[in-house]
Length: 178
Image 1 (cartoon, one colour):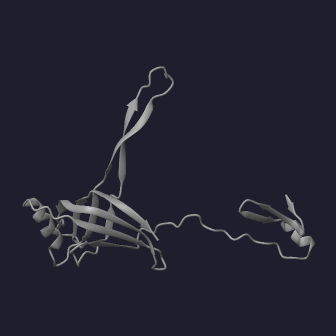
Image 2: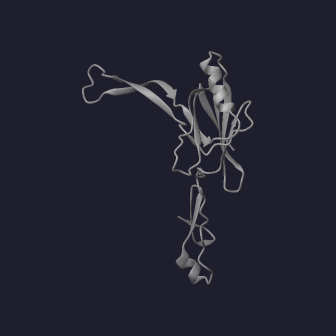
């Protein structure tokens, strides 16, 4: 719908569109509409992992941030054309951390504490950064503890980096966006 006093301009809720043919007739350059991104895309290579009480914790791979909700199929009497699927409970997946083997054995020692019956829970923070270096989002894993540690695989003919893997169970996570 035309706006009084603005030739070739249309307005709607939250937008403005300028007719480029009308702008050319008036001797003005065709306007451009700035494109705004509704979402910022997470980069999967700019992140940092912090574990309470561990200073040497640089990881080459982080995986397993997941939540799964179980459902219950409910057949309602008199409704024969569909089955209702109701959410029952949700559970979080284990977080898997991989890194090159370093001199310290802090991750293995943490898991050995669990094996010996000492429940050593720690909060784990995964921070994701924008390419500019600013914090984009942060995941706080609550009450995490190791459930599996895998040492490196050694081969006589390889030159790959020795990698250790730590799998963590946790009570859930929170996401904080900046």
